[in-house]
Image (cartoon, rainbow, N blue to C red):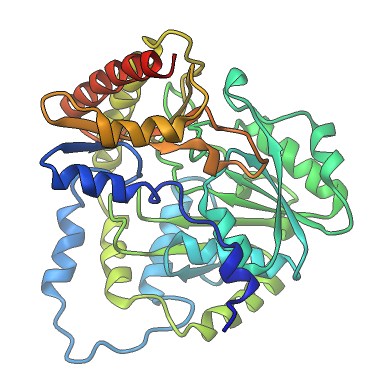
Amino acid sequence: MQLSKRANEIQASPIRKLMPYAVAAKAKGIKVYQLNIGQPDIETPAEMLEVYHKYSEPVLAYGPSQGLDVYRKSLVKYYAKHNIELEEDQIIVTTAGSEAITFAMMLTCNEGDEIIVPEPFYTNYNGFATMASIQLKPITTYAETGFALPEDTEFEKLINPKTKAIMLCNPGNPTGTVYSKDDIARVAAIAKKHNLYVISDEVYREFVYDGLTHSSIMHVPGFEDQAIMVDSISKRYSACGARIGCIVSKNNNLMAAALKFAQARLCPPTIDQLAANACVYLPDSYIEGIHTEYQKRRDIIFEEVSKIEGVICKKPEGAFYIIAKLPIEDAEDFIIWLLSEFSIDNETVMAAPAEGFYATPGLGRNELRLAYILNEHDIRKAMHIFRLGLAEYKKLIG
């Protein structure tokens, strides 16, 4: 029996594919500092967990396909705090941001159509595109420039009759790059000129540092019919297991079609929506606190990475990731070696090879993504091991 083309082509996650090496290391009694995955160690808000503990309905029934009314009303208030004025029917709750992205791809593209996306990009975009039977067309950004967006002409070189959208992640995963108001307006202008949608992944909007502010695609005036925003609570509330996101647009026809997709999968998780709803009403001090904590962690990990001779890395301005271009040829081989052959006091480090965040073959082989999701003590210890390990690895490979 043969599997489908999708089954054969879908990418294994570069974030998770080296986990067997980490499991083997742990089986030998080695502690692994996991900087490979965006799973924060900050505690989930007690107000959210309390909803799970207190839920007492006798039947856990289907909810509305578009999401619970109480939660969508709360989301209207949440987005208003970020100067995004919405009505309830312009929001559809999804099973995590992953479903929102997949919906956006399927809403805008037919089989074989194309979406332009700056690379490196969140690696699961590849999997979503495969499931939607579309093609991602990468536009390369570079570590040397802090992964800044290319000139308009570079975008326009990729636009053809199959191009249906441009996709951004702002702040960026895996780069930590923050696109300015001018960047967002420039991309919207290109899309306007060529009649394209812009799909904006804004999961990390709260995590913008150094006094910068987040700019949303929903802020661009006159772009309402072409703007699609996708979002998730996973990182905002340190609730990756809750699997609640949303897709947002002021395009009525697009949202009517999105509702039919939502109806086909019945409904998003009920209790998780109620838990997420509680988080909307957390005091501002909650976000301010974790923002301060992540900026501190960012400063530590950048300081440690900068100590590596020959590394290329600009200070990221958002999210909680950093990509480092290392003075070696194969970052994946280095990470496997760290997990299999190297430890200090029975401790080692895991990171994510960056090659899997690129669509252009051969790019990113000497880069890796580090997620600064551990506390200050653990980050410093992990980076000490990392730097000593890299020095030893370079000696071995000559």
